[in-house]
Length: 115
Image (cartoon, rainbow, N blue to C red; front, side):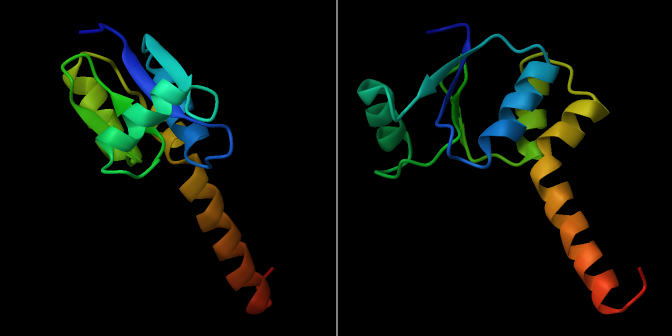
């Protein structure tokens, strides 16, 4: 059993940057495997996710996995392994949704001619 967390993904996945940032902020020792360049990694992800190449997929030292985790689920899992996830980590992990929310808010306010 590896002591590192393994992060399976690829650069085209929009959920990779928030997960990557949260792991980095929490100072997690992890190994990244690009499933578009590593056939064994791709096969492992397909095995974990019932034939789906869903990423990001994380494998933890105890063998448990998370696939496409929310910032809350990933933060909880990291805390179980003794990592500290700060508010900065939470913001980084939710960055994608924060930006989408701000764009929607801006669109609504523009439509209402408030801004």
